[in-house]
Image (spheres, rainbow, N blue to C red):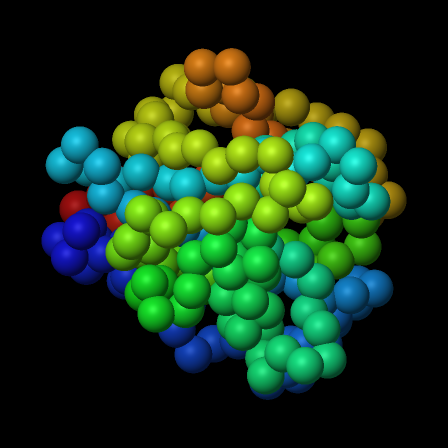
Length: 197
């Protein structure tokens, strides 16, 4: 995974986050939130860990997502939000996560400004699903997302105007919305540099 992290890190933001947003300001949105874009190593290649949210949640129920959630007052900063929510939802403690950087924040249709943090979960053996928030966790090989033939681009009308969104279908799971948008952001950043060479 060290070789892969060295490939990804140059494409991530490191210290460019706005100070007020870092401390949990929602910017132009109603609330601030953060997610973890978690990689892990399987079959000698990087995989992405995703969750499916339970059907009874207020926001994005039943959807495939990254571990994460809303900033809370006890959080030191928005990065802490991503780590706290990861522990709450899938039981992975901070000591088993190596953060590499973050991607540009994005608005969600539920009114959150979401900051995605990217890193590696070094030990999945103690994964504990919180059944009130998550139905299950599952993995997708990152190379699946890197193949442009696996993404479909659609348009939708949102409170922010007309927007496009991406859809990935992996086996029986549909990955779309903000989660797919975050994945595409990272894949495109990596691919842009590859094309420049």
